[in-house]
Each structure stands twice: as structure tokens, then as C-alpha cells.
Image 1 (cartoon, helix red, strand yellow):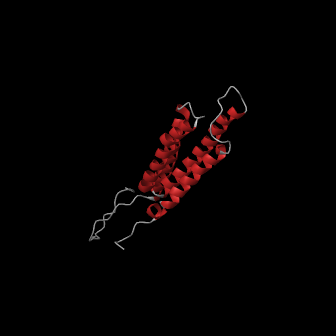
Image 2 (cartoon, helix red, strand yellow):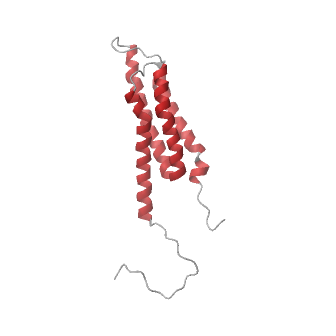
Length: 158
């Protein structure tokens, strides 16, 4: 049969360690990337959808503490577990969060122009500064984790 192990008479001194083939490693890395990016997005965004008082500074701070802080902690944990795929997934998910944040704050900033919408307590430049600050924070976290994430494991005890 074509897929049976070869019956050789070679005696190995140590057992052979099984390594995943390239396709399995690629599939695992891509799956981890997608999972981390989606989870980063959903963990960060849900408070901005659920909480209704985002036009106030206290509501915006509460949504940030319930969403953005846990997403950063999740990103650090994922990078420690998954390495490069997790780091790129974390930054990709954070980019989607920054776009969502810009659009949500821009929607709230309509209160400056329309009487029907509550006037926000945050300054108008925060519409783009806050999402950009979050994105830069996640990139800084990823770069700070670089030695732990991207350091290849040593071989043969070197």
C-alpha cells in the first residue's frame, strides 16, 4: 500500500518526534489569525452597541473600560499563546475596532448639528483621535510583546 510506513531495519537511538506538516501549520495559523481578529473586534465593540449614554464622558469611559481594556488583555494573552498569527490577528481586529469607533463617534458627533440628538460632551477632534489612539496603543502593545512573541524556540538546548 502507498501510505503504509516503510518497514526498514534502521534502528533509531531516540524516538522520532512527530512534527506537523506545512499545510497543518498554515491552516492552524490562519485559523488562529481569524479567530483572534474576530474575538478582538467583538470583545471591544459590544459595549459601544449595548450602552446608550455614549454622548457623556462617563458613558464613553465605561464603554471603553468594558470593551477596549479587555480586548487589549485578550490580545496579550493570545499573542503569548499563538505567536505571530495571534499578533497580526490582534492588530487586524484592532484596525476594525478603530474604524467602528470612528464611525460610532462620528454618529454621536451629529449632536453638535442636530437638535434631536443629544449633544456629546467630548470634543469634536476625539472623533478621529480616540480611535487612532486605540490603534496606536494596540500596535505599541504588539511591539512591546515582540521579544516574547517572535523569539523562535531554541533547538537542542542551545
